[in-house]
Amino acid sequence: MATTTLKIQGMTCASCATRIEKGLNRLQGVKKANVNLALERASIEYDEEQVSINDFEKKIADIGYKVISDK
Ligand code: 9UX
Image 1: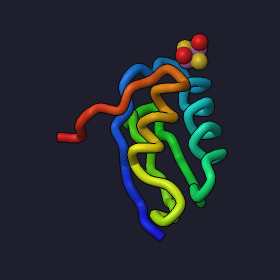
Image 2: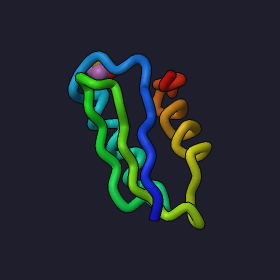
Image 3: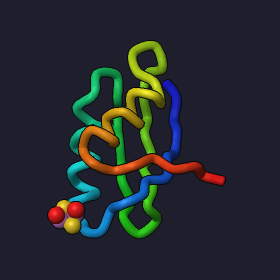
Image 4: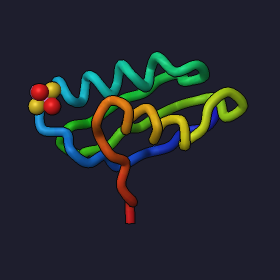
């Protein structure tokens, strides 16, 4: 099991965060995804044999938001 934190651009309300959270949690291999609106961050616990950061970025983009560099 692995964990990662992604910085997300474009969330403006609590529903945005909930939408992303639900989307991520629906992915096969995601154990637990949490999105913090104030911090603009998603933290994801996942099985790296089933799913990858690339899948998270793609899913978030599909829902209409963008993953940006943490640095
Ligand atoms: Mo409401 Mo957040 O449309 O995008 S869900 S602002």
